[in-house]
Length: 444
Image 1 (cartoon, rainbow, N blue to C red):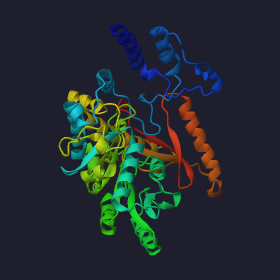
Image 2 (image 1 turned 120 degrees about the vertical axis):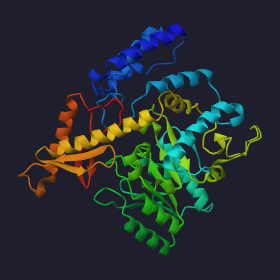
Image 3 (image 1 turned 135 degrees about the horizontal axis):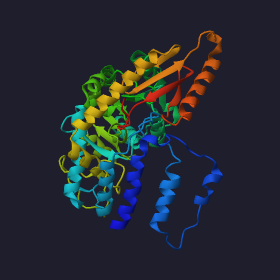
């Protein structure tokens, strides 16, 4: 065991040591390059050094380098090593934490993490939540809970309202929960890419008049495209007046609530019925770490609880939580330790400082972009994303296709240097570049 861990750590240490000089996205996507990995089930074993060489020498370098300080594409995390140590411990002891009686202390550790997150967003003591594999599963459970709370068993005439910037996982979640595509109505956004509340109110009124049953609004606290934050306070007022469930997808932006600026920009998030968070984004943790919080903790149990003869008695307490009773998963890994251990080791202040730094870096990048002739800011940063576009004089209004080609070429030339990796998107029908600063290793 020691030799296995020592050999592995030597490779991991070298990986971290060389991160600043590693290419940020040098990926060989030719299918024939990877055909040798399509192997039959092996009968005999291979030496660990040979397998580590395959992994670290060949496989890992041919990936998007999401742990790199230059990775500013999509919404990255960072891969915190403290969490890797926690996973080594959790996977080694392999305890079962979704039933409180099976591992009371470990279940309490996970419950403490949920309590910390509830306090961060301003939720009351009787709220609840659980850790998920990511935002997709959190959005799924949120819509499932909303459906169970707001609609009858025959629910196909229910209507969900989203913005044109809503993450596609919400649309997938609606489909998985059982809704046809007609049940999801897209509301346009304003110049800051925030959901237009007046258009939402008109849509709700017209749907009610047509006999449709509005039941849920999905707001964003940090969209993928621009980091936009919807007017959460106003949306909460609409939801309360219309008796709708308000879900806030804060997978990317939620943990900026740890900072003063982030909390101010997300005013009203505490009024939501449910909130999606992704610790593998804002807390820099490994992929596979998400969270759903629900204001009415009993609603989670009403939606998810199912009895079985082979299960032990559940706790029936808001303090001792059986996570299998409030979530879709019965057996899963002990996710809580990869959050609890790093925070206990460093204190939450380390994360607050790092997130404040990301806000500062994005504002600095925004101001620097504004000094470049011809560069137009398409979306000013509301969190740690800024979107921009090069528009050259002389091409005229009818040459938007040419402008798109210029910007796609600009993106390719930036990324070809392998120092940073950016991605593009389409905003208002035009191609734009975006910088997203979330990796904790990224500094000025």
